[in-house]
Image (tube, rainbow, N blue to C red; front, top):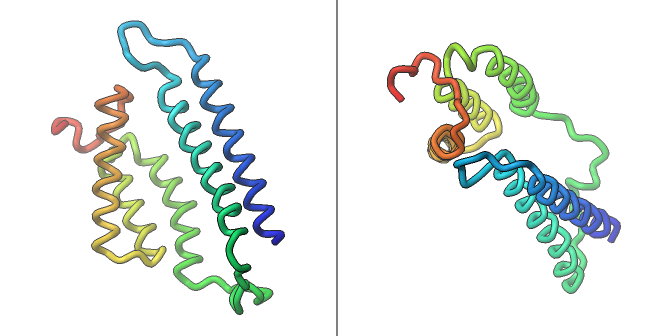
Length: 163
């Protein structure tokens, strides 16, 4: 019961935060001769956060109508020792993001980020085929969305002449 209240409260906070972000981004000035301005992306992030908060809080209301779920043996264990993949995943996340920050300008977004993402997904235990597909689709969406649609220059590094 306590977990449901915590999820409901977190969902409410997330929804309110999303609404605040969306409203604050609407106050940002528009850019002349463009259909969108600096508040476009934060507005959609705020809307997505608000929707996730509503879904999270709503899920606890729908779950309250059903029978209570027992936590099971894994949830009652007092200590979880991380596997080698978990430890390497955290190290990859911290050191990999640092490496991306250092090499992004030189190597380029389209080479740095897929290597980082594929490495992290592998360490997280995701299947290779799904990892490659997820990485390819996300990199295409992010590159197209930022570089082409929002006109945010992403560094191309070694691929400078190709795009």
